[in-house]
Length: 128
Image 1: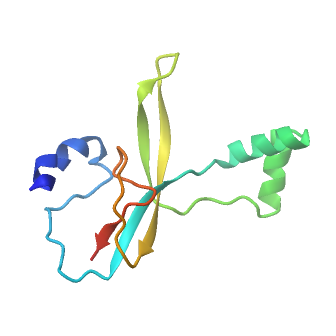
Image 2: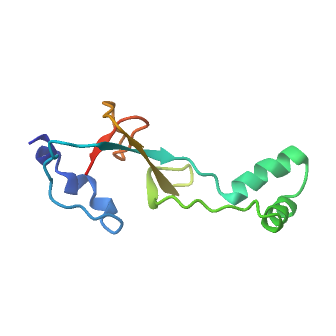
């Protein structure tokens, strides 16, 4: 009943191009696994290279080239959603960002709170 009152379609309205929501299903009596879906902070190659260039007193282009040639350049393979911040910057623009999502499986449930994206650092949902 509480899930129906939540009116999930309203909350996912901005994400309809990225998500597929089905009707609410009952949780089976025997659940063996629980999943925690958490936000994963992923820095871009440019941001990593800027920090390293500053630390080593080298140019960003030099660091980018080194990372590319040495095989250190890695792309995150986690699923993500393109998001737009609800707050505006000083220039009136809204920040765009990728919200990366990691999944971790557990044998028992953990009761914690979820954030505004429906993710949590610790809370689990039944995996069936």
